[in-house]
Amino acid sequence: MTLVEIMIVLGITSLVLGGLFSFFIQSLNIYHFDSGKLLVNRDMRTFTAEMTDNATYANYFVIYPSFTARSLTVDGVTSNNKIYPGQSGNMLVLVYLDPADDSKISRIVGYYRDPKESDGEAPVRKFERSFSPSSTENLWTLLPATTTAQTNPEVIELSRNIGSQSLFYNFYGRSVLVKCDIIHRTNTGANRYERATNTYNFTVSPRG
Image 1 (cartoon, helix red, strand yellow):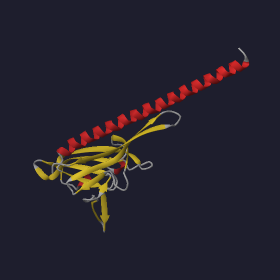
Image 2 (cartoon, one colour; image 1 turned 180 degrees about the vertical axis):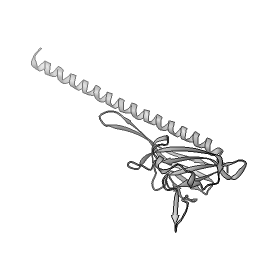
Image 3 (cartoon, rainbow, N blue to C red; image 1 turned 120 degrees about the vertical axis):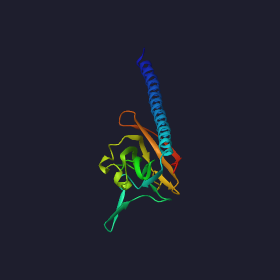
Image 4 (tube, rainbow, N blue to C red; image 1 turned 180 degrees about the horizontal axis):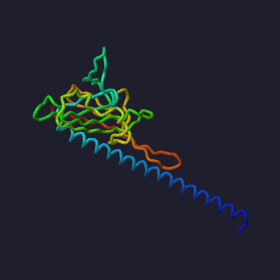
């Protein structure tokens, strides 16, 4: 073979290998993106089923601005820093009263966006506490310590608020509207990440 023929063969081989490599990279990215979508859908199903089950037996709910902003002190008096109807916050607490005495709290279940955010994105975490005997203390004093914010288990890997609205919206004091972007990031190597995102909308109503 002449030198020219060898160069032509090498050129054609390089083009073919380059095309195959690009196809492989694109297929890999699509695979990771689809895997992220599946994880997003899993989070949505899990979150919806869990919140529905817990809300079914809750007596009422309270929404707070965040996991750390649960109390408010004015003129030396500390009180519940709850969100009122028509407002939204990043922590929801479902409250269960003692069946024998509805003035006492027997259990609480909370969902919140981790206050340690990165670029507006943070996991959604959950806590659960039971009280025996049931408690007459103010709700905000029964919540886990603020230092446990990053220690409670995750129920969503990453979430992001939509616009100015926080994760949980108090709808007339009767229902909770949950709205956010759910995100999954998959490391595809070389410090590159494929992101899968879906908007989550859900309404939950304690039995009252």
